[in-house]
Length: 146
Image (cartoon, rainbow, N blue to C red; front, side):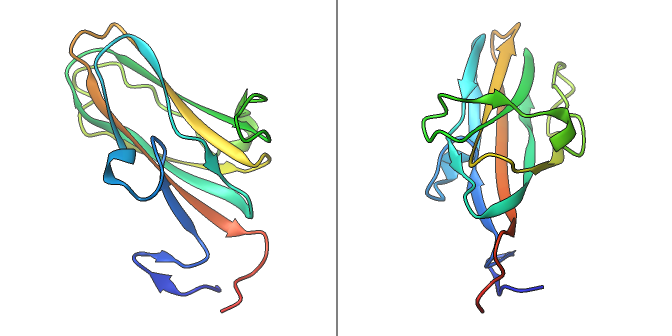
């Protein structure tokens, strides 16, 4: 299996929030209150073959929320492209109802490019919703040295 169990994750995995970095609790949850595209942080996936993404909502007052994943090899994501459906193990669910409070989904992604980020496109929004995203990078390209 390789790696030591540290803080709930094996040491050869890496966890980050999709809306920021540096293990800041503000990087996981985003409060969206307008019709806009909320662009998440650029996550460096170098050294990993797969990613597990946990996406979802907290309180949804109104609006429609379309989660989109993008990858690229340029660190500024100038070459970004939407993730191919063949690289994801499941369809990413959109949230579009007041009854979508406290929902989550897990999708596994094959990493073919170095960088990853999420965008959430919100429409029909007046009060908004809380959305969240966490990524766990899996399957290091080289085995653990421990």
